[in-house]
Length: 103
Image (cartoon, rainbow, N blue to C red):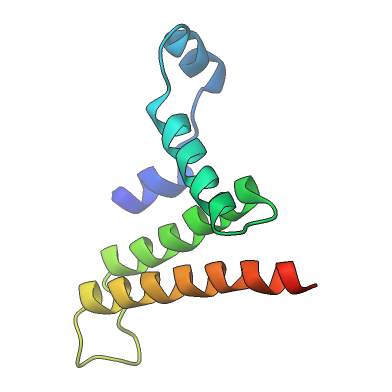
């Protein structure tokens, strides 16, 4: 079950780190690029904001996969609503950077 795999399967981090020793970590590289992009957009804490973005998009994806993304908007598909929701979430996150700068 995908839900079980996504949420309940724990990684053996020491074993994973040992297997990856000396190799590039593509996931970490993507995370660093995302954080750098968020910093360029004005994030005061790009690593934290990257985690917030991942968490929010993960939630949207989970709703879409379980066919619950379109609650309250049954005229649209889960995929369409999830895409719009993800875009809105990103807009809200980025607009919060401007609020941080003004504080």
